[in-house]
Amino acid sequence: MQYSIHIGERKFPPSVHVVGNFTDAALWWGGGAVVAGGVTALGLLVYALVVEPLNIQMERLTVRLPRAAGRLPRQGLRILQLSDSHFQGGARSRLEVAKIERVRALTAGLEYDLLVHTGDFIHYDTGLENVLRLLDAVPPPRLGAFGVLGNHDYTHYAMQEALPRMWRTFRAEERVADRRRNALERAFAAATRWVRYIRYVRNTPLDGRRAGSNDANRLTVALERWGMTLLHNRTIHLLRPEIGLDVYLSGVDDVVEGRPRLGDSLREVPDGAPVILLSHNPDIIASPQLPKVDLVLSGHTHGGQIKLPLWGPAHTQSEYISRRHVAGYFQVGATQVYITRGLGEGIPLRFRAGPQIAWIEVTA
Ligand SMILES: [Fe+2]
Image (cartoon, rainbow, N blue to C red; front, side, top):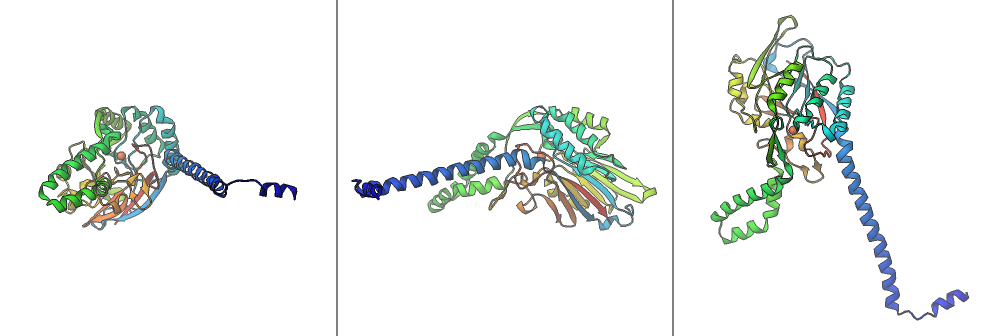
């Protein structure tokens, strides 16, 4: 009783009393929000850096090729597709070996016909050893191993320069467009520039500066020595009458860094024969020879690699693939296309676009 009277008699101006309480509460809640935000951001970063990149899943799908009726084994043609391993070795080697062990566990005991790797085997030359480890980790295919090179097998890029370079390109295009705009249109274009730049980034391949070359010849020799046939603008006739197999497997060089010649690779395929095409970059769908192909197997997009709520895939890394088809199965005319999200990543983050290998059963 004595205590409460004492407090009541203290001469604090009311305003100071009220402001003092509010400040304490605001500091408390504000500080809490900052800490919670920081912890959440750190948690998401750790998840995207080391949790999701290791969470490799196997996607299973069946693809029907009507033109292959009577030309496939009774149980179908079973393909194991690896892609975009992006191995670098060095400081990344521990993570890469963990990925390899995950693939080993996912594929243990698998019986299948073709092993294919659709490019970006390496990120740097120093990743070659882990590429060979990866190929050794999967059970041997019954009919052979085939591959095509990707852009990263030729080149490495300074990706930290991509956004400023894209801004410069975007602004140069805008300046040209401004010459055709009247004053009102120019003002509107200026007011909406950032929104349009964001849309441009979402739908344009990231433009990292070419910072150096990888040794594609050394990689090719090592893969061929391992037992993989590289389909560099060429086609293999998969003919095994004893199991009822008679289809064509083609491959093209990379669309961005190589010299893709789909016409050359399909030259020896008889009209109407079923063709499965390996192309690292799915932009091969823009080729005029595409209707000759029944099924395209690709990688390259990494499924957008980072998929943000409301935003969707960070980018498609492709000129001709819509954001809806950044990974998975779709059709272009009569040609069927499958894009795997692949195993690895260049920019070392994955978020809601986890790595994968694919098990594809081709039937008639
Ligand atoms: Fe890639």
